[in-house]
Length: 135
Image 1: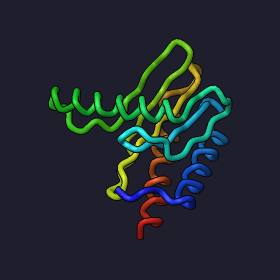
Image 2: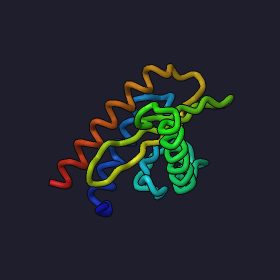
Image 3: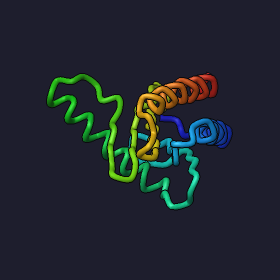
Image 4: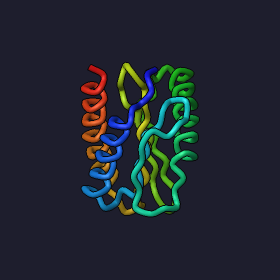
C-alpha cells in the first residue's frame, strides 16, 4: 500500500467538503484506511474525532467482512447503522493501490436513498482521483 501524498489528501478533503456542501443532512465524512488510520475528513461541527471514527470504521468493516464470509453473503461493501440521533454509513472504496473506507454521518431526517446515491457518486469521484494520482 502506497501512502497518501499531500496533494491526494487535499483532493480527498475537498471532495468531502463538497459532499457536505451538497447535502445538508450529511454532518461529517471521513476517509480511512482499512487498518484504521484517518486519511481525510470534513465535518460541520467539531465534535467528531476523525481518528477515532477511522479506527472504529476499520473494525466495523472487518466484522462485516467476517459476517458476510460466515453467511456466504459475498464481499462486505457497506454497513449502515441507524441510531436514535443519526445514521452512520461505512462504504468500501474500491482502489487496488490503497483500499479505503468512507464513513458518513447523517441526521435522522435524511432520506437514506438520497444519501446512498450521493455517497456512490462521491466514491466514484474518489476512486477516479486516486486512479489518476497513481498513474
